[in-house]
Length: 131
Image: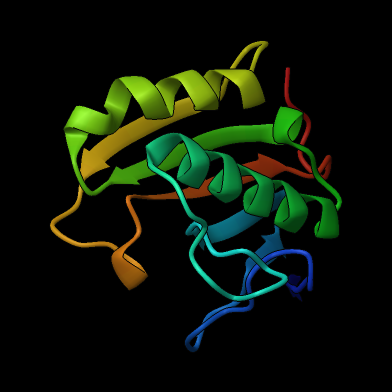
């Protein structure tokens, strides 16, 4: 069984994809960029402000799919510049303070809408028993 997840509390998909898909006891969240869902505009500020917005958007998508940040088992962080890693990591650590998920971080040549950061995630929704 496969179910598309949508919420107005995060930016709407800007292409032929879903904000998230729930399948097989997991929630597969599409990458979030730092768009304010109320205005549809990129948040002002540098990497810290953008990372905070991205993780808040991701949190909203997770909630719509019946998960939380604590349910996340894997993220991928895409940075426009790896020099922003320490600042991004500081914000990220505040959102995942205990037993953070597995993570890959890569530098991307270019991110949508000129974003400095994009993050996607996979979360457990309880349909699969984790030890």
